[in-house]
Image (cartoon, rainbow, N blue to C red; front, side):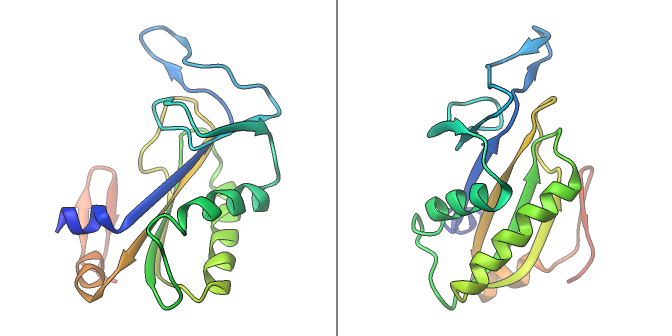
Length: 158
């Protein structure tokens, strides 16, 4: 089941500030105040493009333009969406990201079964977010709806 889920999920991140390496006590990389890096990994792995900071709708559009064709996701698909804050991103900003994700998916006629917004995997002092889409079939949707309880994630029956 994990392989099936892994084959049906795509993620893209954006960094707005560097993470701090605890052992060193300084940023792992540099990023200008008005810069962003699309595709950067949660541990500071290099992204696919660095450039001028854009507004939230443009950032999400660029991320979704890369994520959607990669699987590819198609009209009629059902998905679960995870908008993950990287550690220094206010929850309000995650809702702004999700709003644009939802609008893009609606336009493409991709239905959202459930959306998760919060900090699920973080990096010390890193501002930014990742967007993950999991394409669901009946089996994955049924399992995703089950209750779950871990130290950092809890869900009641959907």
